[in-house]
Length: 173
Image (cartoon, rainbow, N blue to C red; front, side):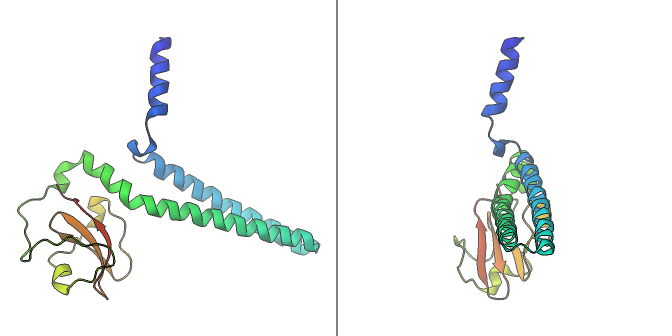
């Protein structure tokens, strides 16, 4: 029994958080909630310092509020940076049929695009727009942006300027 428990503990410790979908996102959401709570507490203490009128306390509390905001922004940036990559990859490995390529070809040849490249409107016409990105667990496209299919790749396009914002190569099987 002791060997079984030891093996289970070693396995749990050895598994990276990325192998367990949902764990990292839940942890980062918890961190963000905690950071927001810290900001509220620091602001409350700053208001109290203003009421007391001690300059050194006010200066210290301002510094604490700035630090709490900085931590929140860092956690939010880390969460946003990792969310789009890890979420769809984990989902894709478990749901291969959703990402099946099918009999799909464009009337133009394949070009490997990179972020920052400017492309023509035919590449991101209505025929190639992914109407339901949530189905593939893709991050929400921003304003004036669309997820577009280009052969097996998925591109995030700024539709006003025709600029590639993000590329997910080999998205479809």
